[in-house]
Length: 119
Image 1 (cartoon, rainbow, N blue to C red):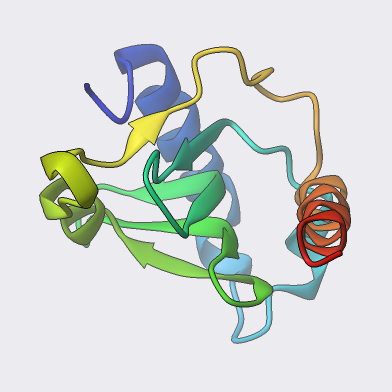
Image 2 (cartoon, one colour):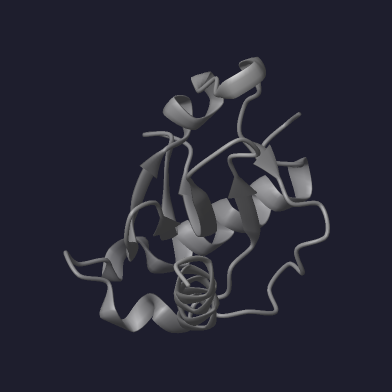
């Protein structure tokens, strides 16, 4: 499966260009950025809600849910090359609503999900 459709990729790049000059180490102001795509590992740990993508470095920015829920960068090459159980790769959630949820809302959803799963 393609991680990004052309429409999704264009929106991620557009968001990157908008914020490129204002980026800093922590990105605190970007929690209000809208998530464009949700990627997930269908056989294990890993969900990514991405708001921006730099095609020059092949890095995306968003909420990364592994052992912790945090804002950060992810290398798209790593996600594309990953093979989990049954040789399945990372997939795109086709039902995820583009540009509806902020990264902050995605963080909150992921934290609630982790709480439920740990019960």
